[in-house]
Length: 335
Image (cartoon, rainbow, N blue to C red):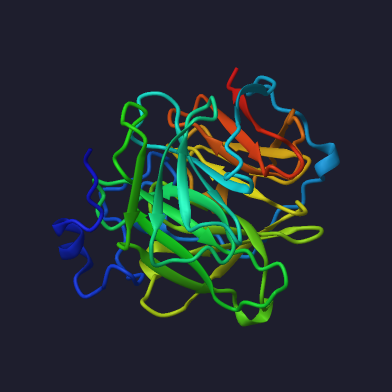
């Protein structure tokens, strides 16, 4: 089983940055956009700031892009009782996905298949689960590797000024491996805070731009969601101040994801799933300014997790266990 997180290439690329702090290294210019409006690296890294999307949720059309949700299996292991984030795995031949649980649970992420079987887990030995709320995948310091981003961004009581995002190399494991139990200390701990004018915020949704590694956080507010970004090339060893790039008229956002080609975005709350689509790659901050469609979503009890599968032929949703004996896994295939 091949699994090397802190490789020599990572060491050289990170120069003076240790394996447990976030550096200001970003993807190289080889991560080019395929959009005719975003063909240069400077445009890929340039943010669209200070926009407000004013669509009316109740007036949105339902998309014909996805079939109705079907249950593919159930998570019956009662140790996974607060799944709040899901992201597709890179190395499985068929659909598999990493899941994480929120506050008070072990500092572990687990690999599942659509039937709900646990294929293995990875422990972050030095990083506690203060309030993990989402997980994403994206580029990192070594463009030949896939990285996972674990979002410790929950702040229900607004006690925390600094949030943490843990970046680490995705284990090269598949559904064909024996059940595995891995551990790693090789984690970049990215510290972020909101601009002073916004104070402390609570958030449960995160995505990472697959082309340039920008981190997007969606706040969980009563009537709207603030969209904040940490550009990859702006990361430092110290606390990084997020950039407010926009506002969505969606209350209580609980999850988000972006397809691997950067053309589709999903954002959900407890009752709805919103879908943005672009014919070609554009920065998420630009796609989110468009009017989305709604998916005919099967509401789940405390449903917080959403993620595209690896080849963008559909997406999965899951909920926290709550009062259920087993958590259903829903699959929404593209038409």
